[in-house]
Image 1 (tube, one colour):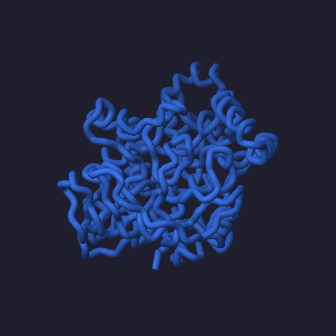
Image 2: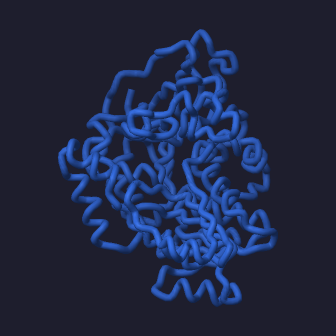
Image 3: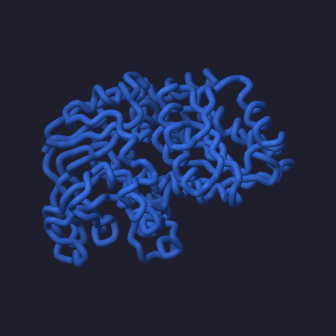
Length: 392
């Protein structure tokens, strides 16, 4: 089969690789019909090279049709149309029963002290082959699927794999009071959905994003948008009676604008031999924290900062005095996809499309075009906001 593989920093290629096969009786094989490029994939493209091997298959936002099931799979049959959540969980352990599927005790990657295994995402999260491919092996398949109908197009359902529940969790964690104000830092795909979910709930949405095309998209769905300027914190405070927003969702993460020194470190660490770079990435304060610093400044006293963006350093410096003094609550974590599906499935199937899932994708392309589209997405050229790849 064809699959998109990691070949080095800022280098991916589509290669012929062996078809996946049933390895355990709880597995299923899915023929992929649509698979998206996620902002988190760009972390692999740019930063996380020390934890990837050349030839690893990327991708964690897939959907398709079941073509084979293991002997112990009871809830899936050949021909079922499914979305595959990006985290791999069992559904029965202590963590899963509490809606913390991203911390699943069955698939935790204990070697690295990490949570649940993820598709297509480095040794830190299990090094499980991903879904930017013709076919995908799905472990623990009875739980790790979302069965969907046959009538609606893939784009209606595809984002249930990651970015839509990630955004929903970000808003849930923000704990905005009814009729309150939510600030959103970053209008990439997750930030777009954060803004739409908040607007759908009747919240006032103030969103910050340097790219005009992304601001324009968010404005179509009810957000008030702002360029990223040196005065943005004061601008947002002025619009909230000087207090700041009730909550802020940071949908940017480690590759935020700002701090060129940390950007240099990120690139330098990625070029070191793995034996040297892995401990540096694990223990160094290597995140650019401009977005989270701004979120702490923008949120009102007693408010909540919700982190949906991915961070990677274990020695990042946070303004603890300010956070303590302002009595800020901080919520974060990998999305617990299955926890939110019952809330989201009716919304994506609603003919009115209240979350605008059909107004997100800017580029559809065959899987073979993936290397060029990774570069386009990373550089934000050609108005690229979300890419969906369609294997032949």
